[in-house]
Length: 137
View 1 (tube, one colour):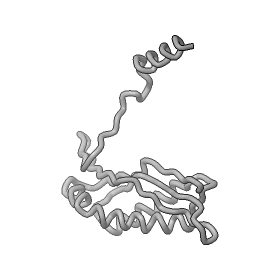
View 2 (cartoon, rainbow, N blue to C red):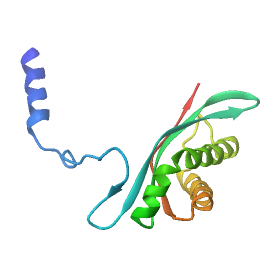
View 3 (cartoon, rainbow, N blue to C red):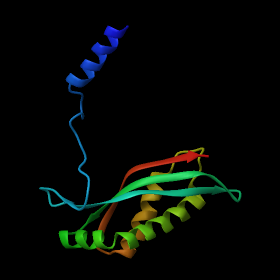
């Protein structure tokens, strides 16, 4: 049994799996060779309220795509205000559309967050949802 586990662990380490080498870069503003200007936002967690009680929470991570490097720098500097806008839009979305018992409608959330953040910062060209989940208390 022990030999089988050691062999499995060694196989996992040595065998390249598809996508196994893909890694996300973290930290500030990222601009790649294609000219993308991406600004990551820390995870946002908002409560899901049903029948006047907290029934769960919705959490998600965003990356803001901006039109140019100057706008990316501006968005990074204005991140607290953009985060406030994000939390307000997410609270409204969670109040109307979220439940701890069903999957989040990512398309509708994407629409709502894009509208709110583009209004707050016109230089944001797209809001990318990279992770979304709901959990019941």
